[in-house]
Image 1 (tube, rainbow, N blue to C red):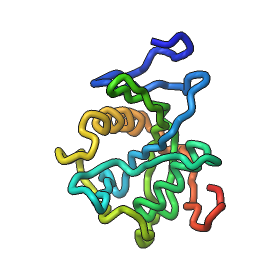
Image 2: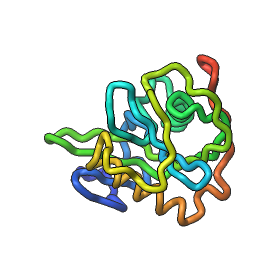
Image 3: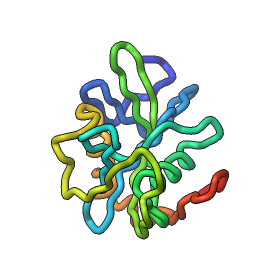
Image 4: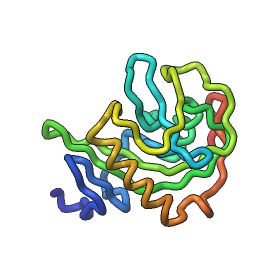
Length: 169
Protein backbone atom coordinates (compact mmCIF):
# COMPACT_ATOMS: atom_id res chain seq x y z
CA UNK A 1 0.00 0.00 0.00
CA UNK A 2 1.28 3.46 -0.85
CA UNK A 3 2.17 5.50 2.26
CA UNK A 4 -0.21 8.42 1.57
CA UNK A 5 -3.27 6.19 1.10
CA UNK A 6 -5.30 5.53 4.26
CA UNK A 7 -6.54 2.04 5.04
CA UNK A 8 -9.75 1.23 3.18
CA UNK A 9 -13.03 0.91 5.07
CA UNK A 10 -14.04 -1.92 2.73
CA UNK A 11 -12.00 -4.21 0.47
CA UNK A 12 -13.10 -7.01 -1.86
CA UNK A 13 -11.87 -8.45 -5.17
CA UNK A 14 -9.50 -5.57 -5.97
CA UNK A 15 -12.04 -2.88 -5.04
CA UNK A 16 -11.35 -0.66 -2.02
CA UNK A 17 -13.63 1.98 -0.50
CA UNK A 18 -11.90 4.84 1.33
CA UNK A 19 -13.59 7.31 3.69
CA UNK A 20 -11.49 10.21 2.39
CA UNK A 21 -9.71 11.02 -0.84
CA UNK A 22 -6.04 10.14 -0.44
CA UNK A 23 -3.47 12.89 -0.97
CA UNK A 24 -2.29 13.30 -4.57
CA UNK A 25 -5.16 11.21 -6.00
CA UNK A 26 -7.43 12.42 -8.78
CA UNK A 27 -10.78 10.70 -9.01
CA UNK A 28 -11.39 9.95 -12.68
CA UNK A 29 -14.95 8.65 -12.26
CA UNK A 30 -18.14 9.48 -10.39
CA UNK A 31 -20.55 6.62 -9.70
CA UNK A 32 -23.99 7.14 -8.18
CA UNK A 33 -26.13 4.57 -6.38
CA UNK A 34 -29.62 6.01 -6.92
CA UNK A 35 -32.85 5.33 -5.05
CA UNK A 36 -36.31 6.17 -6.35
CA UNK A 37 -39.51 5.23 -4.53
CA UNK A 38 -37.72 2.59 -2.46
CA UNK A 39 -35.97 0.89 -5.39
CA UNK A 40 -32.51 1.16 -6.96
CA UNK A 41 -32.23 2.76 -10.40
CA UNK A 42 -29.82 1.07 -12.78
CA UNK A 43 -29.09 1.87 -16.38
CA UNK A 44 -28.41 -0.17 -19.49
CA UNK A 45 -25.98 1.16 -22.09
CA UNK A 46 -27.21 0.85 -25.68
CA UNK A 47 -24.23 -1.36 -26.60
CA UNK A 48 -24.77 -3.79 -23.70
CA UNK A 49 -27.34 -6.21 -22.31
CA UNK A 50 -26.17 -5.75 -18.72
CA UNK A 51 -27.05 -3.23 -16.00
CA UNK A 52 -24.89 -0.72 -14.18
CA UNK A 53 -24.95 2.03 -11.60
CA UNK A 54 -25.16 5.45 -13.27
CA UNK A 55 -21.85 7.23 -13.58
CA UNK A 56 -18.94 8.00 -15.80
CA UNK A 57 -15.74 9.91 -16.42
CA UNK A 58 -15.14 13.37 -15.02
CA UNK A 59 -14.67 16.14 -17.52
CA UNK A 60 -11.35 18.02 -17.13
CA UNK A 61 -12.97 21.08 -15.50
CA UNK A 62 -15.38 19.18 -13.20
CA UNK A 63 -15.27 18.26 -9.55
CA UNK A 64 -16.48 14.75 -8.63
CA UNK A 65 -19.73 16.33 -7.34
CA UNK A 66 -20.33 18.20 -10.59
CA UNK A 67 -19.64 15.04 -12.58
CA UNK A 68 -22.08 13.09 -10.38
CA UNK A 69 -24.84 15.67 -10.96
CA UNK A 70 -24.21 15.70 -14.70
CA UNK A 71 -24.05 11.90 -15.03
CA UNK A 72 -27.15 11.43 -12.88
CA UNK A 73 -29.11 13.70 -15.20
CA UNK A 74 -27.64 12.33 -18.43
CA UNK A 75 -28.12 8.68 -17.50
CA UNK A 76 -31.42 8.72 -15.57
CA UNK A 77 -33.14 11.99 -16.47
CA UNK A 78 -33.06 13.06 -12.78
CA UNK A 79 -33.98 16.74 -12.54
CA UNK A 80 -34.17 17.13 -8.74
CA UNK A 81 -32.37 14.85 -6.32
CA UNK A 82 -30.73 14.55 -2.93
CA UNK A 83 -27.07 13.62 -3.17
CA UNK A 84 -24.33 12.80 -0.69
CA UNK A 85 -20.76 11.57 -1.02
CA UNK A 86 -19.95 8.11 0.34
CA UNK A 87 -16.19 8.38 -0.17
CA UNK A 88 -13.80 7.37 -2.88
CA UNK A 89 -12.98 3.98 -4.30
CA UNK A 90 -10.10 2.35 -6.08
CA UNK A 91 -10.13 -0.56 -8.49
CA UNK A 92 -6.94 -2.49 -9.15
CA UNK A 93 -6.93 -4.76 -12.17
CA UNK A 94 -3.90 -6.04 -14.05
CA UNK A 95 -1.57 -4.03 -11.82
CA UNK A 96 -3.29 -0.73 -12.70
CA UNK A 97 -5.30 1.26 -10.15
CA UNK A 98 -8.03 3.72 -11.06
CA UNK A 99 -9.87 5.99 -8.63
CA UNK A 100 -13.43 7.26 -8.47
CA UNK A 101 -15.93 8.99 -6.22
CA UNK A 102 -18.98 7.14 -4.92
CA UNK A 103 -22.25 8.97 -4.25
CA UNK A 104 -25.67 8.03 -2.93
CA UNK A 105 -28.71 9.81 -4.38
CA UNK A 106 -32.46 9.88 -4.15
CA UNK A 107 -34.20 10.88 -7.38
CA UNK A 108 -37.12 13.17 -6.54
CA UNK A 109 -38.14 14.28 -10.03
CA UNK A 110 -37.16 12.68 -13.32
CA UNK A 111 -37.87 13.96 -16.79
CA UNK A 112 -37.36 12.34 -20.16
CA UNK A 113 -34.05 10.60 -20.66
CA UNK A 114 -31.74 12.99 -22.52
CA UNK A 115 -30.18 11.77 -25.74
CA UNK A 116 -27.19 9.68 -24.68
CA UNK A 117 -25.69 6.23 -24.80
CA UNK A 118 -28.22 4.98 -22.22
CA UNK A 119 -30.96 2.80 -23.71
CA UNK A 120 -32.96 2.05 -20.57
CA UNK A 121 -33.41 3.03 -16.92
CA UNK A 122 -35.03 0.47 -14.65
CA UNK A 123 -35.90 0.19 -10.96
CA UNK A 124 -34.72 -2.90 -9.06
CA UNK A 125 -35.42 -4.06 -5.51
CA UNK A 126 -31.86 -5.47 -5.40
CA UNK A 127 -28.91 -5.62 -7.76
CA UNK A 128 -29.60 -7.91 -10.73
CA UNK A 129 -27.16 -10.70 -11.58
CA UNK A 130 -26.50 -9.33 -15.08
CA UNK A 131 -24.12 -6.50 -14.16
CA UNK A 132 -21.68 -4.79 -16.51
CA UNK A 133 -18.98 -4.74 -13.81
CA UNK A 134 -19.84 -7.76 -11.62
CA UNK A 135 -16.78 -7.54 -9.35
CA UNK A 136 -16.98 -3.78 -8.82
CA UNK A 137 -20.63 -2.73 -8.62
CA UNK A 138 -21.70 -5.04 -5.77
CA UNK A 139 -18.95 -3.59 -3.55
CA UNK A 140 -19.92 0.00 -4.39
CA UNK A 141 -23.61 -0.81 -3.94
CA UNK A 142 -23.00 -2.45 -0.54
CA UNK A 143 -21.17 0.67 0.64
CA UNK A 144 -24.01 2.91 -0.58
CA UNK A 145 -26.54 0.68 1.20
CA UNK A 146 -24.66 1.17 4.48
CA UNK A 147 -24.87 4.93 4.01
CA UNK A 148 -28.58 4.65 3.21
CA UNK A 149 -29.26 2.57 6.35
CA UNK A 150 -27.29 5.14 8.36
CA UNK A 151 -29.66 7.91 7.22
CA UNK A 152 -27.22 9.69 4.90
CA UNK A 153 -29.96 10.97 2.60
CA UNK A 154 -32.15 12.41 5.37
CA UNK A 155 -30.19 15.66 5.53
CA UNK A 156 -28.47 15.47 2.15
CA UNK A 157 -28.61 18.65 0.08
CA UNK A 158 -31.13 18.99 -2.70
CA UNK A 159 -29.72 19.53 -6.20
CA UNK A 160 -31.18 20.23 -9.58
CA UNK A 161 -29.70 18.88 -12.77
CA UNK A 162 -27.27 21.00 -14.76
CA UNK A 163 -29.41 20.93 -17.87
CA UNK A 164 -27.56 23.57 -19.91
CA UNK A 165 -23.97 23.32 -21.08
CA UNK A 166 -21.66 24.94 -18.56
CA UNK A 167 -24.30 25.16 -15.84
CA UNK A 168 -23.15 24.02 -12.40
CA UNK A 169 -25.24 22.18 -9.81
